[in-house]
Image 1: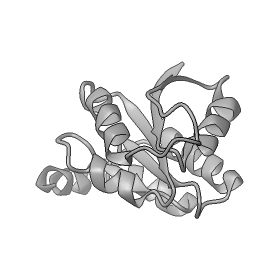
Image 2: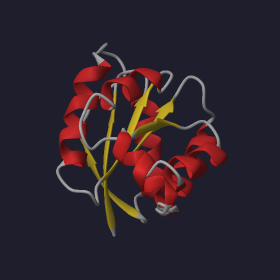
Image 3: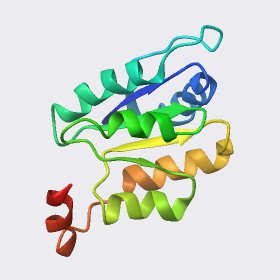
Length: 141
């Protein structure tokens, strides 16, 4: 069973919990917080915490959830060995893995319907990097 690191800020907490509930039979999650939706927290703290875990092994994957997905993505992409992609459709979730070898999916709980978020996660985690011509591009990041 694939282990997935997952984290959110207060705005993404409810979707994070729904993701864990939906996929608990398919993936093992290590939840890095936050632990409720009532106390406002700073999303970069949770993105940085998750990125340390994901970047420690090339086989690791992460899921970050905030209100828009954008803040988490921006904070995550400051780390070496991290390629975080804001995913809002099945197509961009697939391409983020296929062409960009993304290792973190970020989701916007206020902008993405739950059903779409679930499908994006499935596609993201099931799609393998295509390699080939994309490798030299990834190295330039």
